[in-house]
Length: 430
Image 1 (cartoon, rainbow, N blue to C red):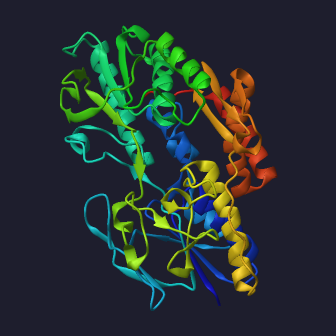
Image 2 (image 1 turned 120 degrees about the horizontal axis):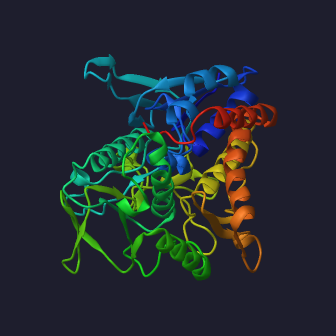
Image 3 (image 1 turned 30 degrees about the vertical axis):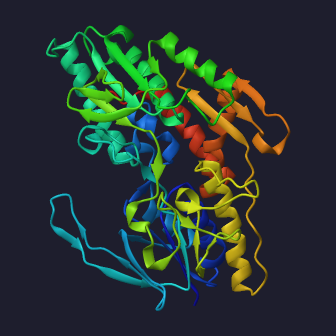
């Protein structure tokens, strides 16, 4: 039986393996496998909500093993360490448990078709001190770590045990993650008093958003980015553009001009790259951000039996620009790769992937949502904001859920979620 392995259970990888399992695995037409180093899936664009406490990863995460059982594929816990293209095998490295004891030994899996959907990690660009003093938001565990540290700072402030007069937080990177996290933090502060935290108000938070470029949200039109920046400043965020960070210390961030941005809690969200181990793995072609180069069919440039989708794929468009690392890109790539795998198995011609930009939206917590729709699907993007934009923003996550669960189950999940919000606190602030 044909063996198909998808490595990485992110937005694109999980949607792809779910569809392959339903259409091929259940019918005995292929053995479909998912490999991921985590046991559960959480949509990455929501990690800033986990960090601020607006979402509980323990409740909203999806179990890979349970989902695999229900959709016709198998799940293997592990991290990819090597690819043997000659023998068509991948190696999963040994794993340790939380106590540092051996849990799983090194394993080898055979494949006929391999899909790499490993995603991306934060790129610190080699900036001094970042890895030691800043928190990344690449995985749910990192978001939960930030949340724990955030609650500790506010508890210390309420008990009068902080040496400063405010809780100082700095976020590096004015993209969607940095902007959305900034707004969510102010939303969290406004609810803290109801959960036993003392002497807290939005005035106790001193938040600095640092962006090296001339403006925040470079992927959005100037007017929309300007609206978002005004909203953040109205909340109290100190937005600093044209400010490059050259070092992170235990006292804060050092800028290129020698200024200190004081902070005891720092988040680095200033760029992404594919994981370092992908660089030239198995002799495959890669770029300086470790992304693997693919042909228009999303097959690697040097091996037609290996596909790459999502943030770790370097896919050029006809306009000479690479496909941007967005959730919508991963979703589209997953759909095209499914069709091409089916075509390849049936000895039919494969189709090229064409990126369709549906626009970008940025959610500023409960305050507002701004963005543009249609993107390159029409001559001029449609600017949206407010309730309509918020509705579209939420619908993007619903589309991901529909791809995983179908319309009926997604509708039931939405109903249960609404009931839970009525019965339980809105924020995880313990």
